[in-house]
Amino acid sequence: MSDCMRKFSRKAAILAQGIRDRVNLGPKITETVKGKLSLGIRILQAGGIQRVFRRSFSFRKREKLLKAFQCYLSTTAGPIAGLLFVSNKKVVFISDRPLIVFSSDGKFSCILDYLRFI
Image (cartoon, rainbow, N blue to C red; front, top):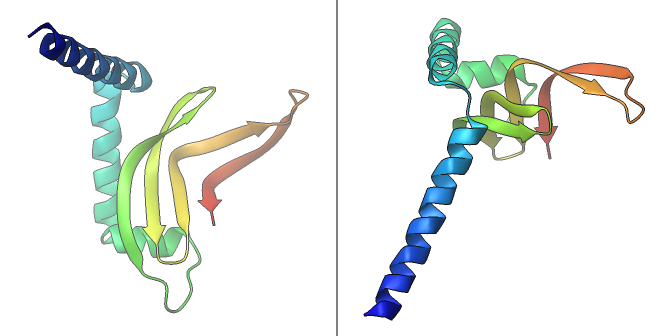
């Protein structure tokens, strides 16, 4: 019986830690709701998620959008809200706001509208 309780206790602790991590990484609930609403409006104005993908990124003839996710990119400066697109050719993250990148010596380097992972 005590072995069963120990296993249950470990699983509960892991679940609680996961919830704590998620809550700490995410913004306030009002910011989350505003972000989701603005994203929904942007998708509706563009005519669907497929069109957001096609307008935002160059795509090849036979490239197909497989999946799109609303997610947070975890950075040292904090989480960045955006969309993650997965196609049969690439994985791309587009931020709700521009990403400012600094060089290793702390000087301003560039502003990115999206990150592309090949």
